[in-house]
Structures are given as C-alpha cells and as structure tokens.
Length: 146
Length: 146
Length: 84
Length: 84
Image (cartoon, rainbow over all chains, first blue to last red; front, side, top):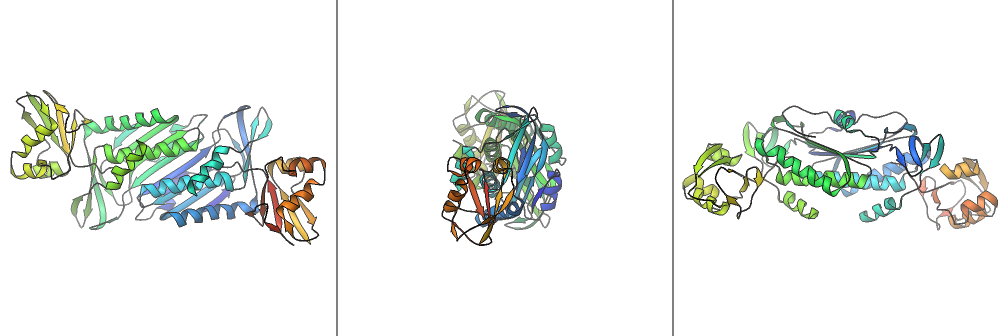
C-alpha cells in the first residue's frame, strides 16, 4: 500500500491492482521533476529521506484519510535517490465509490505528505546542488483540513 | 484532446502523451462501472449520447477550465456503448506546474461533465435496463465553482 | 418554418422516436414549444407537461425556457444527464 | 542517559555528520536540548539558535518544543520537508 523506492512506477499497473467490484472513482496524483527552478535549469534532483520514519509517517497520513473518507483503496509510492528532469517522483492513488471522496482524500494526502513526510529535495543546476526551500503555500494548504 | 469512443483507454499511455518539461503535477480521474445499484447487481451499462453535441460540450468545459487555471495539458476520454461491471467509463487528466491547479481543475471538469455533457447511462440488472436517475449532489456540486 | 426535434434516452424510448421534422408557425420560446408538444396528448403530455425534468438544447447548446427557437434549428429534448 | 541524534538534508551536510550518540544528564524538553546543541558554538549555534527553521522528531514522530526527550530516544533534526 505504501512504497518508498528508487525504481520508477507504472500507474496503469497500480490502478489494476486496486480494482474491486464497487469502485466508482479513482483519483490519482503524480508529481514530476520540473526543469525550471529559481536558480536555473534543473537537470536532476536528489531525494533524501529519513528511512526509519518515512514509512510510518505515510502510514499515519493514509490512516487519517481512511478515517475521514469511505475509501476502497489507497496506494502511495514515493521515489528516493537521483531523478532526472521529467521523471516521476510520487504517486497517490485513491479509490472510492464516489468522486468527491476520491478527489478530497487524494488532495488531503498530498497536502500532508508535502508538509509531514520526511523527504528533502536537492536540485542540480549546472552540476551544483541546491536544497529546495519549503513553500509556505504547502504549510497553509493543510490548514483547510483542520 | 477530447475523445468519445467505444474502445477502452490506457492511462499510462495518455500520461506519456502529455509530458512537457515543466509539468510538476498530473491529476487524473477515472470513472468505473459500479456493480451495485439500488435495484440489484449491475452486469453492464449502456451509454447513450448526443453525438452532434458531446464533443462541443466537452470542448466548452475544457475551455472554461483553461481560462480559470494555468494548465499545461488536458485530456478527456468518455466511452459510449455497452460496458461491463468494473470497466472504465471516463478519464480526465490535467497537467499543471503545481498541484492545486491540477486538483481543482480536474474536479471542476468532472462536476461540469456530470451535469452538462449529454450522456445517459442505462444499467442492466438481470437483463432488464434501468435508466440511471440524475443525482442532486451532482447539480449542487457545480454551484461551488460559481 | 421547419425545425428538427431530437429525443434522447428515456424520452427517445417513450416516444419510440429519435428525431422528427416539425412545422413551426412562427419563432417561439422553448416554453411555448414545450406547450405545443404537450398538447399532442398521451405520452407527449406526460413528458412535456412540466411534471418531468426536461433539458433542452438548441443547435447543440443548452437552452432555457426563454430561449428562442427559429427556422432551421435543431431542438433536442432529454432528461438530466448521467454520464461520467 | 544516552540518546541518538540524527541529522538530515542541510543539517546533515552543514554538520558533516548523519548521526551521533549523545550523553544527556537528565530527561529534558526539545527546547532545552536545542539550547545545549546551540551552546556547542560555530555551525551548531548557527543551526540551533532559533534563527533556522528546524523540525524535530522523537522516535520517528514529529515533536514540539515542549516534547520530552528521555533515555534511549532517537531525536532527529531537519529542515522543513520538501518531498512529493
């Protein structure tokens, strides 16, 4: 249900694995490595994490989503290590009977992941690494769920 | 960008076709045929549409989404004809630099599609067809975008 | 003047007809056209007397009761949509 | 009592160290532990004197300044997260 891995993922395979007779709506979020940063053109990023904590932190976020919405399946994959521009970083998949629960819970999981899960991105521009600064829009995004 | 078709779709292929260097977020919605209806177990559905109007109607919904959010790609596929339980009905894919625009615009497109696009579902239970009644939650869902 | 009427889903089935060429004495509102159709009696009146929720599109665009129907228009009648 | 300190991202790089075994005289708050670390001077004070935004986790759960650190704990220090 939750994977932290270096290898890429295939959303079609992940959706197929979720199937159950009464799923009516599946919402997915994929985060990708963007080329443009404030300091220039990003060729790659490096994703560091806190191994002992990441799995537990994501499990807690998913448990909170399950407590709020009637979900029929949740899948979270977050990659770590070096990723080139345009590569996939994260996948959140949520299945439910109806679309409102699926849309809301996927947005909720991403808002929490962005502010609670111990991952850090370093962007490489012309061979030099720059730690990404946390965005204040991310910490204000989770206020709407309180 | 918009397809109305009898054949199935593959989300992985559709996402690959959207790729551009600065996409940071892709949100997708997939609607599936649910097995359970108020009158029994659904074995299949039949989707009727108004051919002269559906393409135009979906183009208008996508144009409204593009006018509201800075989107980098939109893909809508809606299937018609007979579909068995668990089959995919509709795909909405939205790509943007940031996740808020992608989540909101995908939900917006679905809310409008559910109330404005001329498709009608008939559910088959024990070989008997029942037209699906429109849900009032769908017509109230679009009020939040006004 | 001549217009084309189209019927979909439950409306098409109940009327046992998908489309019809209709003679109109003069341009009129959707509301007036609905009254004319209801006046045909039987299944027509049950569908168009206001007791059923009916959506109307003129030339493939959603219309209101006040929209005007004129020569050559394609006017479609159908129940609330249920796709997606 | 002994605790384990862990440092990630910018903190790990600036301190040139990912973890450290640390001797604690007695259980204390996160706030007090931060003061002890800042008192080490130089790079330690620049990271832990309150001028930098620092998140703290105790035994892999997010903590606050008032959380209590005790024997055997794993206490991690890192900047605001930027995954996803």
